[in-house]
Image (cartoon, rainbow, N blue to C red; front, side, top):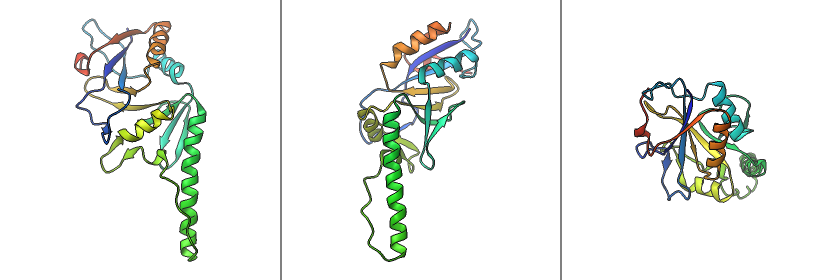
Length: 200
């Protein structure tokens, strides 16, 4: 048996640097295969059904990396933040980042030539998502992404329960997740917290 499990974001897991309250309460999904009668089984999204589910839910996905900007994903989704859905907002965010980098590079050249430098644009949102000194995503920046209509998720790993986990913010996606899972013959389970899952 394979099943998709919904659960609330564990308070014990440090994912966000809470410089402000999140506007949308995140929720988590994980996937369990080869589940026995006692609820034990490996946690991952590696089965054929699981991969079909992820593809149906997110379609084309773009992985955010502060050094490479957006990378379109074809196969596995790496740990971290990825965008999906409307490419317009993705293109807008990337253009802002590219403009910032171009101005910064020009200023470095002008400085060497002792020419007047240009005022840098506001730090683009893509470069302000992560508090590197804390090793956490900034809640204020996550809120800005949500305000701009960005569709994204954070891929992480919890343990010993849940394992491979997607943290989501879009509540409208819940119905689609349930319908898609049912169509693929995947059982849908809802738990109040990660404590309701069996360790593996």
